[in-house]
Length: 629
Figure 1: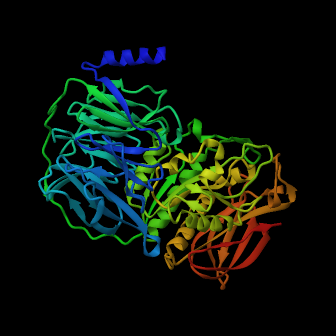
Figure 2: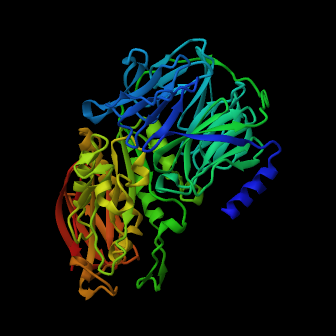
Figure 3: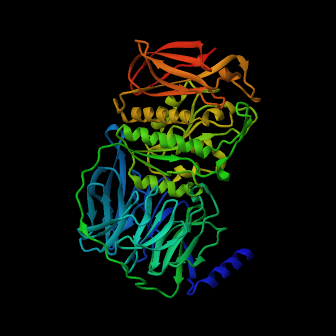
C-alpha cells in the first residue's frame, strides 16, 4: 500500500489540476455489472454477468425492479433524460441468424414497448447530448430530433450524427475495429478506442487531436479529462489488476482507484463516477476538480444526409484468432527437427492466426460477412479479452469463434479437439452455442490427416473450469452475447501435431473444416462448388525418431519431399503438392472440381516408387487420402 500511495502521489504531481475523490458509497453489494446512473442520480441500471437480466434500483428506497429478463438485454442499456430506459434484445431467427430489436421501459408504468423493429446486424444504444438513439444497420430510433450530437462506430469508421445529418471518417485508420465512441460535453470532440492502436481524441471531422495509450470504456469527465479503465486483459482477470484513472488530453494521468481493489466499467454523471469493484459491487465516487470547458473547438465535418440502408441478409461471423505476438502468454514450445537438424520454434499465435485468416478468406468467398480481431501477429494485436468481447458484441455478428490449440501440461500427451462455450455443460448462456460446438467438433474430428488419441469433447466453461470460481469461465466469453464458442482444435504439445501445425496448409485445412461446419449450422448449402483433397504420407519401414508418447500412425516416420498429384480419368496430371521438410508428411490439394480422380504419390522423384488411390471428390467437402508404404 505504501508503494501504491507513493505512485499515486507521483502521478498527481504530474497533473496540473488533480481530481480528488471526496466520498464513496456502495450502491449494489454484489454481482452487478455495466452500471448506468440516471441524470438525477436517483436510479441505477445494471446487468448480471451473463447479460440475461437487466435490473433497475431505486436508490432512495432500495427497491430493485426487473426491467427485462429475455433476449440478453444487459450490458448496453441507457437512461434517457426523462428517466426512461432504452435497451436491446436479441433472438435466433431463420437460419440461426441473430435478430436484434430496441425497447423502451417506463419506470412509472413498469411497462416496455418496442421502439425499433427486429433487424439483422449490429444494433447499438447510444447516449446523445440530450437524448438516446438506438442505431441499427438499416433503421434507427431517436428520442428527439433535436437531441444533439452522438457518435458510433462500424468496424474502422466513425459516424458523428446530428439529427438528419452525419459525417463519416476513419481517424485511426484501419484496425480490428473502433469502440466506445463518445462526444465531449462541449460537443466539439470525439474519443474512441482503436483496437490495438490506443485511445484517440479527434475533432468532429475526424482529424486526430490527441493519441493516448490503450484504454477500455473511456468516458468524458469534462472537455479536458477522460476517465478510463486500464487495458490489461481485464476479461481474463477474475479479482484484481484493473483500475480506473483519469487522463488529460495531453497524456497526464492520475489513478482514481487502487489497483489492488479492482475497478472496471466506469460511467460519469456530473461529478459522480460509478464503477464496478470486486465481486460485482457497484460503487459511486464523488469527484472534485477544476472543470475544463470547450478545450478545443476543432474542425467541423462535411455533413451529409443520413442514408437509409438495406439490411444485409448475409450471415455475419466474428473470428478471434487467439493470442497475438510471440509473447509470454503464447506458450512457445520449440522442438528439435530431425529433418532440418535444427530447433524449430512453434508459437500458438502463429497457427491460430493462419487458421483464422484462412477461415476469413474462405467464408468471404462463400458469401459471409466476416470480422476478425487481428490482421497481424504482433504484440499490439494481442488485444485485451474484454476488448475482444466488446468488438464481437458490437459487430452484430451471428456467431463468435475463438480459435486456439491446447496443451495438456502432463507427461502422457493427448490429442483431441475440444469445444468450450459460456455456461454449464448442456446449458449455454447464449442459445445456439452448444449447436455450434457440436457442428464444429464433428467436422474437426473428421480430419483424417491428423491422429486423434481420444474423441472430441464439448463442455460449458463453468463446468470445465470449476476451480476458477463460480460462473467464472473463459475471459473471452465472459461478456460475449453472441452464440459462439472457443475451439481448442488440437493439442500442440503432442509433438506430432505440433509438426503438423507448423505446416501452413494444415492450418488452412482446419479453417476449411470450420467453414463447412459453419455452413451446416446456418443451413447454407451450395456455398462452394469445389472440394479439397488432403492426406498424410508415412514410411512404414521407419519408426519416428521423436521421443515421447506416440499413437497410431504417428509411430512411423513422416515422409518429406514427396510429390502428390491428381489425375483425371484420362490420366492427365491436373494439380500437385509436395510434403514439406518438417516431418509431418502432410499434403493438400485445393479447389478440386467434383468427380472421380486418382491420387498419385511419387517418393523423392523416383517414378518407380508410385502409390495410387482412386477417390471421389464432393463439393464443399474434404476427401482424405492417406499413404503408408
